[in-house]
Image (cartoon, rainbow, N blue to C red; front, top):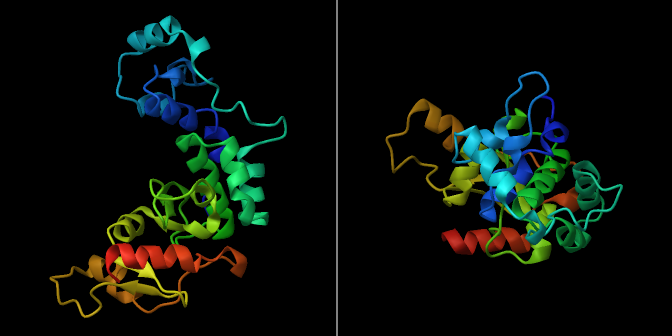
Amino acid sequence: MQTNPLSMRWALDPIQTYCIEAKLPPLTSIVIGAKSGVPGTGFIGCQLDDLETAHHLVFDNDWSKTPNPYGAFGPADTPESLAQALIDQPENSHEIYAKVKVRGVAQTVFKEALVRAYGQQCAMCGLSIYQALDAAHIIPWSLATPGQRLDPRNGLLLCTVHHRLFDCGFITITLGGRTRYCDPAMEDGPHSPADKNMTTRLHGKKAYLPSNPALYPSREALEHHYLRHGW
């Protein structure tokens, strides 16, 4: 399996995501790589490409008026420890969300929890490349309760392709733990060989679910997905 780079990125990507969501200056423009001497992927991900302008925006901003998104963290809290807490006691996910309710930070912890629960492989195809895996919400973030937003039972670890197909309602997982595609007979074709490999050939096959059944997708979440997409 690919190495999980989460611990190295923790101080970068969630902060940039927070700044973008809160419409704040790109704080990670001042985070410089020790070897490269330039900002990393967090700054690259923002809409600015002028480093000098980004620095002016950061240093001219009155940060005293901005709440600290990590203010509720305890001294021992890390992405890994919070993710493990979600796995150990998913029913207490609302307590973790109270600490990391900034969406970018919460999504980082949520992904780490699902990576651990699913053994770092896509629930549908088994792909294990970390950078190509997403933490997919079954009940979408915008419709989920605070507890559901970080509950591993409201999530699936999916590769980017199956994440998009799942969100569009083209593919799902049954209550019995099998992959189901909306057009198994390929009536809506034409389907390329790649299409078939990622969809129809997975139809009816057992999904790659967590080794711990307590972390399986919940009936409530899956039924919400079925109803939302007309399954």
